[in-house]
Amino acid sequence: MHPTLRLINRNLTISLNPGFVVWQVMFPIVYIFVAGFAYTALIDSVALGGLQLDYPAFIASGMIGFNIMNSTLVSGIIIWNDRRHGMFEQILVGPFTRRNYILSNVYTIGIVGLISAALITAIGFPLFFQTAQFNILTIPFLVFASITGSILFGSIASIISTRLRSSEGFNVIINTVFLFFAFVSTAFYPAEGAPEPLATAFYLNPLTYLVDIIRAGIFGNFTEFVMMEMLVLVSLAAVLFVVAIKLLTRLDL
Amino acid sequence: MSLSSIVTRSLTKSYGAVTAVDGMDLDVRSGSVFGFLGPNGAGKSTTIKLLTTLVQPSGGSIEILGINAVKRPLEVRKRIGVVLQQPSYEPNLSVEKSLEKYGMMWGIDGRTRRDRMEELIDAFDLQEIRKRKNEDLSIGQRRRVQVVREFMHEMELLFLDEPTVGLDPGARRKLLDFLKNKAKTGLTIFYTTHVLTEAEYLCDQIAVINRGRVLAVDTPEQLKSTFGKQKTIKIRLAGRHDGLTGILSGISDCKIDFNTGTDIIIHSSRSEIVLSQVLQLLIENNMTVEDLSAVPTSLEEIFLRMVDSNAPNS
Image 1 (tube, chains in turn green, red):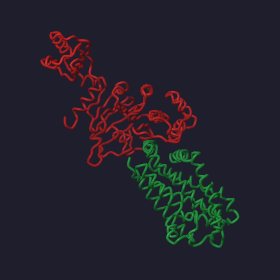
Image 2 (tube, chains in turn purple, green; image 1 turned 90 degrees about the vertical axis):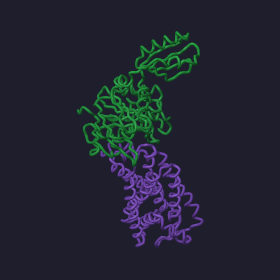
Image 3 (cartoon, rainbow over the protein chains, first blue to last red; image 1 turned 120 degrees about the horizontal axis):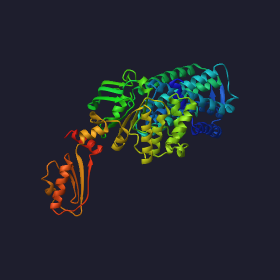
Image 4 (cartoon, chains in turn yellow, brown; image 1 turned 180 degrees about the horizontal axis):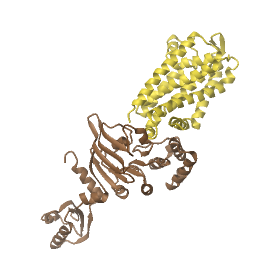
């Protein structure tokens, strides 16, 4: 087996432990079913292109993007954990190159992102299947969103992992990043109707672009704006990916 | 097979103005256990990082198993095993899963991995903790797993950086015996430690280093005979005698290192002559000897003396 594949195997074993999988499923389920139905009294429906989505369908589709972000932030911190627990050096004195290590993390993040997206799509499906407008672009849009989103958020986690040394600092930064991404986005509520500064802040957040693309795929809302969002997302992911790789390559031992 | 597993020439590593390894020449014979001794900050771990290709040297050459380690590091890493000084573990994996996954990472097939894992679990008494997660182990248990894990794969040269730190005496002895047996099968071991008795028990050759430089390399016996011609004479008197130092001051080559009035420790390279002179003086001064011994200088004393004489202000 190729060294990178062996490292992916190892990464998936330590990432996909039962606790992680349960958390990855339970956390969005609570949002989808509890918040989704509880907020229906406040948000009756959300306009998306020519469609009127009920709130549970809106949040269930938003949760796919949320889960991609959530899972890849977690798997992106493999590097942090490896540094903290001495496995980074141990791997690099083994039969691997830095390139093997970096690639294995990229693939692991991508796989975890795809698994998370698939899980939440399956769980949320009953809520949006009535309004969904599946077509030939649905699957490519979802796969594009999963991979680009995974690389983007995985790169952010990797950059944080390479720059910080203290556990306290790392936890503060990761939690702050998570809170901003999760709640200053269109994953939970639509930008329309939000106060202007908040609506603007939504579009400074890559998760907003990610969930917009996912919703476009599921509900057939392929607009020019969504195409632009795809371009922004892929450009941002590429830049962050290059930065993460450079930092990892230069990481001192 | 090459006669030497490790050859370095003028090996140097600097971090800014600090030179951690300073022109080191090493020659480690294949199939031997090579002890690498030095005080904290002497450059032991940096040397290991250089030899295991983890960091690049600032100057000099490194040849590991006949391979240029600077130009072809991956080829070197495929043939060596390394237990670094700092702990390394995956917190959420059980002991047996860690061993199994580590074997997988080295490309060992499933059946061999399982067989080897069972052998190692038996050999190192890990049965009780095999299902426990690494994060739930004590520091010593974790260290044991870290060392054991390295034997999941084949290697020609093993680097061990203070492997017994945190181990209880039983586990320590078990590891040393295991390493001794491994060395008999032809494995070359590069072993750093602070515990001189370990080095004496295990190593065929010992290098003493300080401030990034090799002070001496030889067999433990040769080191002792070269640097330890002196013997240590220990005397215990029945009662306290405050004028003891004055009484013994006339004897030549008699260095009193410790004197409480009842217990005296003397170092001398003419121990037989000095001992008889000391005894004669004690009897003349009506002092009763309760206990007396003359022992060769230990490796630890030689080590301390060498390091002290190499200290910046010596």
